[in-house]
Length: 339
Ligand SMILES: Nc1nc2c(ncn2[C@@H]2O[C@H](COP(=O)(O)OP(=O)(O)OP(=O)(O)O)[C@@H](O)[C@H]2O)c(=O)[nH]1
Ligand SMILES: [Mg+2]
Image (cartoon, rainbow, N blue to C red; front, top):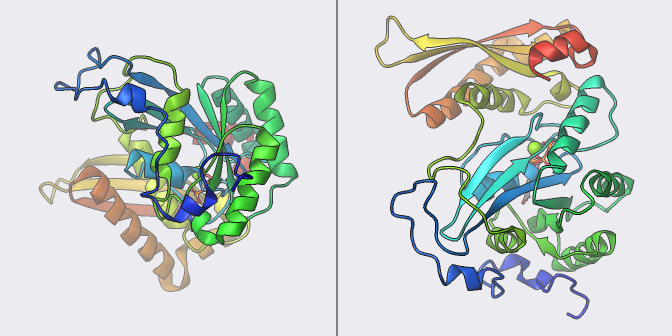
């Protein structure tokens, strides 16, 4: 397959075992296990640095981040603009530490929230060692992708890029091959096909990323998986549960804040969490609540289960829905929501 620009044949996209090229093999040979997990002590040739995944909304950046980190640190949903702040996830290998910065999807902004997200993302680019440009296998490369690549080139002209064709499990091998070529044409750099859902080639991608990182220290201790604090992660898990099954513009209107949490005074060992789901209009409140409150009950159930997983303790979750009129376009409210 001479046309394969990546040296990673699209054919291998469905055979994770077929990962013959390892650009880090030379450094891997001199690594030893780190017995203490301390920050200072690292093997010769240890590489470290920051990689950011960028792409249009809904291209699978957060799912890929979670797959590489091996834990759910970023929420995902089948709607654009799920991620609203850069989420750092840390991948620990014997020979390297990769800090993955998952960013909100980029697009021409329609609201003040959209503008703030774009600014946040562009700021992230200028700070990382490698940028992974994500394009899904099942959608044609379009003006939105070109706009993103231009933005990346402007903000971070010298940062090495790697092209990533995501969701390869959703299309035929031929289609993956075509997309690899198209992305290579757009970027002029190595491209890697992956499926974060099926775990296809994610290790190959990691090898390529590590190969582009400089030698450097461990930035985080071995057990650290994300920078987000527990409260933020809980709020995000609630938002993820609330987004399930929503359509059109409503997902954009949903925001979540943790009001308070404390040890239950009546039930030993139980953490009581009080949170608010914000929407922009009364009609949206009714949709979130659902007929007879059924939708809200499901949200509480799903979110509580995720939070229990995260905290490893029993949780009582109290969720209320409030209207914050047009918060996406109101600077004052945006500030209050943390944007
Ligand atoms: N079949 C398949 N679906 C995927 C894959 N990766 C992501 N998805 C789905 O694509 C949708 C979007 O995934 P996300 O990871 O939230 O996308 P994102 O790029 O982070 O989206 P934003 O945060 O909105 O920019 C979700 O429904 C995922 O389950 C994949 O490898 N295969
Ligand atoms: Mg995301």
